[in-house]
Length: 120
Image (cartoon, rainbow, N blue to C red; front, side, top):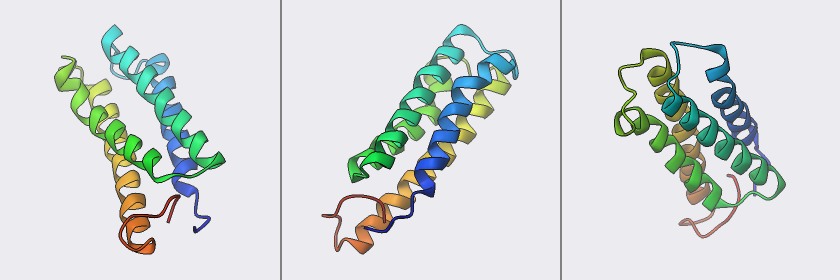
């Protein structure tokens, strides 16, 4: 297992960003947008911290799912008309999802078909 953990540190920062942005009032977060930002940001940060302690491939899949959720949440939860929160969650979702996808693909290449664990 390669000791590259920049992905986890980046996800900790992105998760923290999601938790804090409703307090900054960027674009005026509705309650739904704020709660989604708090909960999803906390989940991203917790899984990234867990990955720092013991990197496992399933954590990357969870982050990939959380990234996809962040991209789709404004439309599913009905706050897509709020430009600030929508852009924030979509952009952060793209970043988290891209990092997770890259880590899983890299891990599959280095582990010979995806049977390995940890970060690539």
